Length: 481
Ligand SMILES: Nc1ncnc2c1ncn2[C@@H]1O[C@H](COP(=O)(O)OP(=O)(O)O)[C@@H](O)[C@H]1O
Ligand SMILES: [Mg+2]
Image (cartoon, rainbow, N blue to C red; front, side):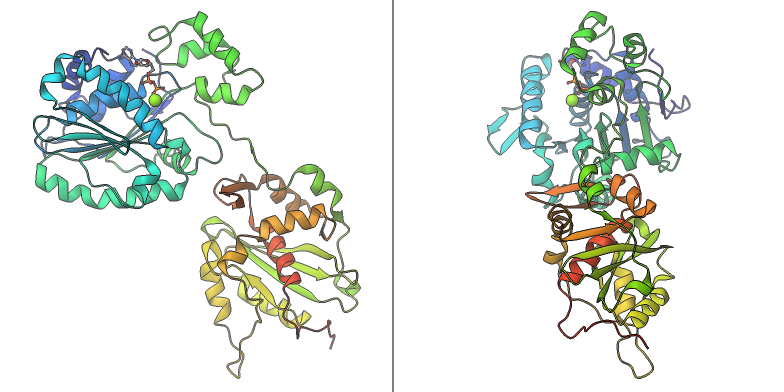
């Protein structure tokens, strides 16, 4: 069988429900391929202490055209027969993705001997479902539909989970996980969450984190996982290597078809390596500031002794998980342009209050910080710092959540229009090169999880530039005592 790239081995001491899944797959007309059977056997292991599934979570990563979704269908059909009134969800990125796959499944089951255990499917636009005689039901849904409401069920699959951001994925899990214990008690069958996908990109923050945890051995003992794909040192252009590591190669398609698949990815080698080698596309597809703009907006750093009374605002930003805090200055030049300059990258957030208070006092400058997100805790601490008389120690430029969403766009247009500059700094250069965008409709912000390095240096410059443009009136020119 195709070698796995990583994952949970079969524990032969446990019984497994896999053979029953295999029987359902045969009846559906898609007898399990060896890799599908392996996954069914391990995911279906029975805990001898409880008599139900040992695993509550199954994480499955394979290349495309493997038979992932087809395996999910067989498992779901079997799952519907563990008892009466079971709720099974098949979630995909959009209602169309979920529905397209589900209609294929409906055809297969209705044409199979299993049609006798089903009742008439619902085919409504927003209400596709396959009910069974025993009252169980399988329902496809779009992730976005479900995310706001929460799902309670006995089995839920997040298919092609690479498309989910960490927020969206976790919202769904937050709705489902707490109900698992209740359902287990009510039904006697351990509910299961399946997360299945081909590797994604740097934007695939939900699935990347799940996989990375498994690869680091940090998954819960109730999670089993499976990872198929080419190893790190393989060349994705070597079709023989793809054939060796793709678990459906030679079974669902052969090498001559593989060459045609490659043709479809002409000019897109990273897309090819991802789809058929299951290799994560770690490249930044969408950097915040393109290299050319960044290069032409660079100026020499300003030394504190050369400020000549120019007003200053300090921007403060925090990296994901609070690993670093960056402080940048926004310097208001006499010609109304702003120079942004990275001053400090501090470890953690603990040193930031003292350092910022010192800078603000020394330069009589206000600060600007996001009061939500990764900086929320630090912002709170900074706002509560007082001097001996109980007066606030640091003055802030007020910024609300809507303002915050504009800082990246206004910074980039400032650089393009030559209204904003950045003082050269290798760590700021790295941050600009590694920071990716995250889109929400027509607006974007820096994607902290989707980026491949520290984002706080760049974000602190964005904040500093915004702060310099929105400085409180009374902040006069720099005074030196
Ligand atoms: N066990 C199987 N036997 C026969 N055909 C299968 C089997 N598993 C998958 N297929 C077929 O292979 C194709 C790809 O399967 P699919 O489940 O969509 O793959 P994936 O979700 O991994 O991209 C589909 O046309 C499907 O019907
Ligand atoms: Mg699929």
